[in-house]
Each structure stands twice: as C-alpha cells, then as structure tokens.
Amino acid sequence: MLAYLLATIAGFSLGLLGGGGSILTVPILVYALGIESKLAIAMSLAIVGLTSLIGVFGHHRNGNVKYRIVAAFAPAAMIGSFLGAKSTVYMTSEFQMTLFAIVMLAASIMMFRKSSAAKVVVEANGGGSTAASNSNKPQNEQAPKKLNYLLISTQALAVGLLSGVIGVGGGFLIVPALVLLARISIKDAIGSSLLIIALNSGTGFVSYLSLVEIPWLFLFKFTAFSGVGILIGTRLVPHVKQEHLKKAFSVFLVLMGLFILGKNLF
Image (tube, rainbow, N blue to C red; front, side, top):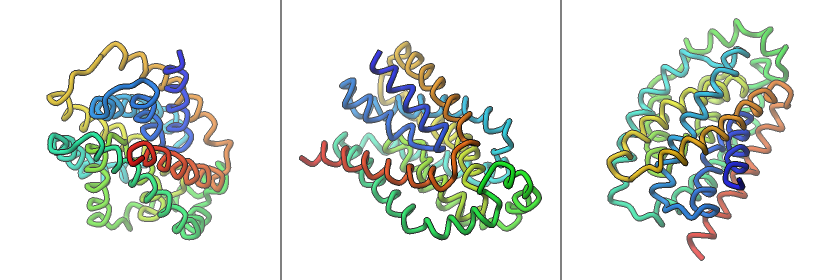
C-alpha cells in the first residue's frame, strides 16, 4: 500500500508540474521497493509515459496542449530516447543513478538562473491566470511561426537521450525549454510537455524490453495509482499560481537530486 500511495504522489506531481513524476518514480522503485536500477528505469518510462497520456486529456480540455509545438519537439526526442536506452548496455547502474542526480541538480540551477526571463515570457503571454491566458490565445497561437526548429530539435534530441539513459520523461527540461524557446505560458508548457513525455517515454520503454524482464502485473497496478494522482494534479493546475509552480519545481529538483547523489556517492 505504501508503494501505491507513493505512486499516487508521483502522478500528482506530474499532473501539477508537467514533470517530476519520473523523478519520484525511480527513487521509489529503487530505494523504497528494492528494485534493481536498470529495471526501475525501464519501468519508470512505462509508468510515466502512460500516466502522462492520462494527464494529456485534462490539459487538452483546458486548452493547454499546443500540438504544433509538440510536433516540433517530439520526433527528435523519441529518436534520442531510443538511442539512449540501447546505449545503457554499456553503463553500470551506479553510473546511471549518479547521472540521474546530476541532471536533476543541473536542471534546478538552470531554472533558477532563467526564472527572471521565464517570468517575463509568462507575463507577456498572459500566463498570470487562466482567464488572462484565454484572452491572449491569438498571441499564443502565433508562437509556433517564430520557433527555431533546429534549436528545439537539438534540445529535444538531448532530452530524449537522457530519458533513455536515466528513465525520466524529461519534463523538468521540457517545461522550461518550451517556455523560453516557444514563448508560451508555463501552463501551456505543462500540458504540451505531458504529450511529449508520453511519446518520449513510450519509445524508451519499448527499447528496454529486450534488456530487462518486466513484472507486468505490478507495473499495471503502480501505473493505475499514478494515473489517479495525475488526474488530481491536472485539476489543480488552473488554481495554482505559475510563480508558485516554478519555485516548487526548482526546490523539488534540488532536494531529490541531493538525496540520490548522496545515496550513490556515500
């Protein structure tokens, strides 16, 4: 029951923040349930991918999924995820988990440094509230015309590689990338990131099937509880201030990154 409670919390963070579900899922599987790291990473991709797909429906209803931006980001991310997963046969579990922690800390630092720029972008797009965001729909719909597709594809490929190697959906990198590069509100970035995560994670999971043996029944149960969590988190998004989302996201990454790094180095 503890595992399923933690699964619900992981899904909740994914729905509320557009990321963080895999950051919780991998440590839960490895440290709370004693599952071997490579298997935990593979299972995390399936859990987060399916949970993200559930969350997409709620965000689609709220108009927070920008499909043209997803189409620009997802293909390169999926290719990277496939290549990253296949490359793990040459890596130790300790290396993967240490890289997991380093990436989380680097992402949190990036978000702190870019917070001012992101805030300007959010305000320019009317992201301060749901009503303001809806009133500025014409502005946001024009954003894809100004996308730097080469830059976005390059970043998407890097996110995909990391997803395949360390079992994360990449939301903690995708969300700030969409806000800063695509110039959309953080709520639209969260909704769009969930669809990208689902595609990205699904590709990585399929790549792991020939490398590990999956306990399918447990996987489906864990995913079901995580799905409940993401439905709750998605419903709360319109009622939470974007500044609070960003601060909570950054602090969360720092704490979890330090915890995992400490577990693997000491």
